[in-house]
Length: 330
Image (cartoon, rainbow, N blue to C red):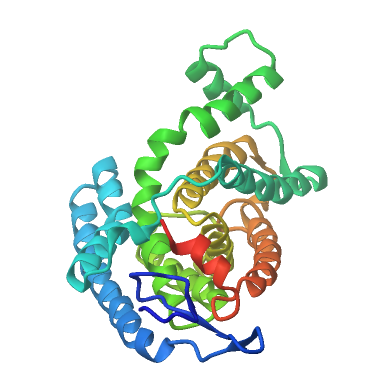
């Protein structure tokens, strides 16, 4: 597109927004977003992505049924969103660099690492203080001492070492898993949805799709099994993951890269499932409040999502061209 008095935000990209400048009055006139041309292509890509994802997920579930407990089956499942995104990108000629491979300022990588630790702590510390869960869990300490070869160390030293091992040492191995999801959800789905709807809704819709994708594993008991009712677990997880969709979309937009969200995904899984969950001992009703299927984390994430929603309103794709450029140019 070559218009002398038009600022093109996304050159060579079908995510195009324009601002017309009046050369005589030096004023700015907002013109209509070129969404009429973008929406059909975006809708087609999203629809095709969901169809391909459904097929790949079904195949992965069948494979998992034949290989129960297999790490390979889990890896294949977590990479189905990435495979769907790459296939659809190739079919529809969407450039793969739009996934967002650029390493942006280190601060966003740090935000991706710190954010899940922060909201997990806000969820679990009240449980420990109120007695809804107790800390430390003796079983956690025993296993950590064996794993870390710290038989004579103090409880605090073991806890700190375990925290570092889970959140730092296991970061790179975890990226192999989480990157498969993030290429699909935040590398493809959020940007494509944002071409047709408000960026906040893109985060919300992506969270809903993300939650639905997890449903087969939850219903089968392969993921999130506990002694609480299945309807309660699904409700808490739905709030958690839909809120998470908004939070992850905010980080993707602000950072312009999938690496911070991939790191956030790893740290979320590791710090909650391997640290906070396991260091918390059950006091009777703990399962109703702890973990990804409990109330505490769901409510804390919901509060964070509200804050991110408000921030995303300031970077609405229809009004803030600079935010678009930072978010989707790689």
